[in-house]
Length: 118
Image (tube, rainbow, N blue to C red; front, side, top):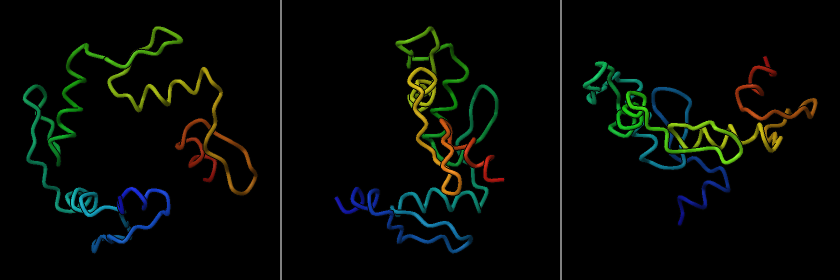
């Protein structure tokens, strides 16, 4: 419950000792720290690509199959990941949840807001 509460408060008590990143959960910090060590023990048997976490390998393996279980109900597009479907659905709804704090312009993708700030 405390960890869930942090998603609302923005509290991030777990600080990486290698960089400035901070996390709300210790497990997220541990996962992040592998980016500094370069440790990638989980290897794809189809393309030899390696990953720091088994979860990332499992997600990656979907790219080698035709399996796209997340289907858009508005059009014929399908996606490997539910998060990609949710982002795609904004093209149908017009939702733009990312707003510039300086000019109030809104964007449907976080990356577009970041580009706008540059």
